[in-house]
Length: 329
Image 1 (tube, rainbow, N blue to C red):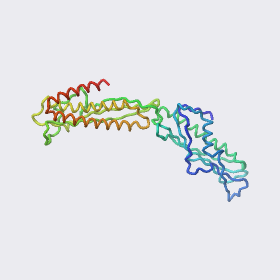
Image 2 (cartoon, rainbow, N blue to C red):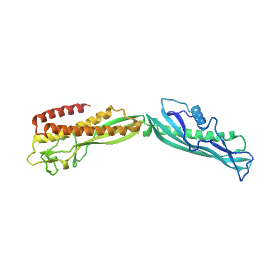
Image 3 (cartoon, helix red, strand yellow):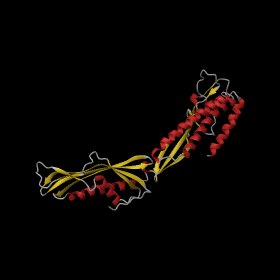
Image 4 (cartoon, rainbow, N blue to C red):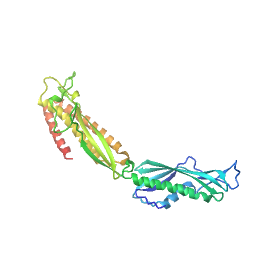
């Protein structure tokens, strides 16, 4: 066959034909033209055994490469009519190729091939070249597909590499995106003052955008972290525009930044699987979001919404220390 796989090996072959009876249905010699009858002829050892043997004999196996599973969806050769001195037939083959990723079988691509043939009425071995030709064609086609797709197809990627960036927006609109160079000011408090016993309030949150591309069989993933706060939802009661109150609200924003940095740390600690990296990232994000909510509540409870000055000083020191720690990572 002349094919040496460079990107994969065939780990298994499965028979998933609806009809798993004989592969070939041939005409007997001396058939009556208007009432031809066929009889079943299978490959030696059965269709599945024969295909496994053919694959193993023709495709060298290197277990260090990607494990591919072949599923036989259709493999049938049928003779329907007699010709002068012989008979004609039609053969068709459909193979489905999947890759084993950890515990998941991921579909890659399907191949379908067919052939018309004529042969002399005689021994069933006459159809063997047609069957072999179909199998060889399917395997050569898949080998070429793998060689072309191995470096760029996300299903064939081997590892995930993550780069983090911090989202910014220029010019700034209603939303403020966190940066240490841009602290809150009272001009950011654009919301209407509700009926509330508090002096001021902000509503920070965290999110992310994700962009990925595959190069050299690596998923290069850029995660753009968003720590944000809408000006239109920030409010302050008249007579409370003091540096002390503004600091209390800034610390809410800082806590969201800390939770976002912990989100990064969680992802860095993961060995992200190629087949389901988004699932892991989503779980880490939800954990970070819950952490942010918990920190915000603890902060307000312990400082009594900033009215306990001693507790506020302790939280200022705690937050400053944590911001320095996450800035080093």
